[in-house]
Length: 499
Image (tube, rainbow, N blue to C red; front, top):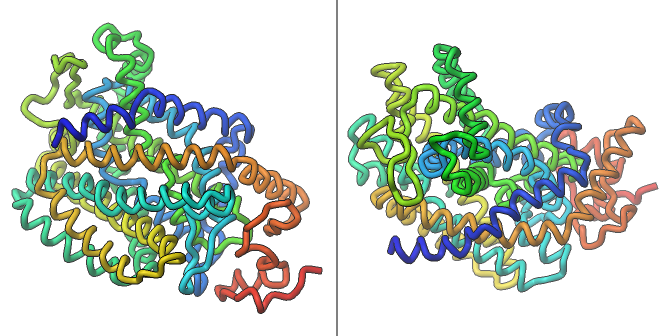
């Protein structure tokens, strides 16, 4: 099975996808005049702007739902894996794909808002929706929807569950079978409660878990601050093949940095637009900017905290393409959460390993919940045509089975299957946002123009020549904006004509 999975990954994660992720991010950054730098202040302001409505969630809740997906096992186990197979320089390429990927996150999340729909009283959107409406290619949209249901409902949850099982076994000696059963029961309670319960859970848990982890990691870094300059120099030299010990794996540093960077921050992968489309905002660019900042939180903050902690303590391994050890700092521990647990335990005896296990539990579990929401949204897309309500129930059962299976299986197989899911979604979504980029940048230009006039931007697609934005057409008039902000949703037939 491992050989089959590795063969498939060899095709999906060819150098073409690596260069595509970096190239598209660079292109969007240049075209937007590096919006990820120009609008940082606006991103932070917008995070706390707006309220939830009967049909949608607030910008902050949507951000939390997105971060629930972005901040996961990739921020702990993924960083350790990237360093093992790509060397310290892989961390630099994770930063690079995050910085450039912020522009991709803006494009995809803005498109998700432009083409969202209201289904069964809830806002729904994502790549399948903007592919169908923006490109008029139903077959492409259905391909993405089916691939995403399969990836987020079957393949990706196993990675998160596997890391939870491994870390709890290391820290508390809990049998993975017990962990699997507990995860299934807890997940069932949340996902059977609908999008509002998911949003409430994410907005409550995510900020505390991320902040707590960053603070503890920063304490460890501060205690070893004298070593930080040398670590940064090592990362820089390794990233460009200038380090004698790791120069031979430059190509692997780039590949693993980009692969784990995409897996961690998910920019361009197509997962972010699902949660961002649920936000009740007056202009699509608002949520696009918020989602761009979420990439920074994930990679530049959380992943960096993990990477610095491992490199400062020296408790990591690096191996060459032939499997030979290039550096051994932690013998007998497989690449993954065990690295981080050992590193933190070395600095905080009796506390570090348990803290990482608890942090990883929250990181990974919230990601599993986010995966469910993404898969459910794509089933909602499919059900508009075939109307099979039982598919949602089947998804819930399938996801619970997937995490039980993933918890007790080997890490290599779980990560390999997860990579297949990420790669498939990334290929399909990046092609789509390249074809639809004009719409996203038209929205950005309109947003900036209204801001320059001192207005709170309101989106009118008909004025911008954007077609098939059915939800927005005549639906966000200035007369109704205050009603939306007050926390009450409204229907199209209640709108008054825009004067």
